[in-house]
Image (cartoon, rainbow, N blue to C red):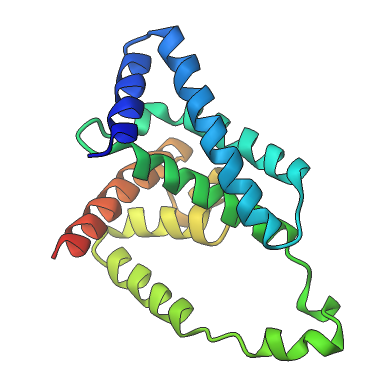
Length: 185
């Protein structure tokens, strides 16, 4: 374990115990690191500091709001990096120009995209999802993959809204554990 992991995890644990100073220190340290991460990633796609700052605020808010979901037995920094990465992916999806808007001289770059990794990832997700009970599968697919609201997912899956939320929460924990087991093999 690195010194950074030890320091950040200690701050997170104190924060979860109600120590407000530790919580502020944690968010401050994470903000500095994530700001640099987002500036580098967004700079590579032609976005500036303003977008990086907006994304940083989204990530810090998500970390703050989801801190109760952190598994104390696991390392802390991978949990933060996952949140940061998903916020970046969501941002890029929301702000990706249509391929129809690509200038003709850049068409080769767009068309040359190798989607083998995407296909393999989709296969892995589907294979893992098959391990879940049908209600969990439906809830996760509807909200996380299809982008439906919880209310829409509840109607689609024949569940209550709270049932969908519980299924998503528990299902994602099961999937995370399954992924962790596969990466350790």
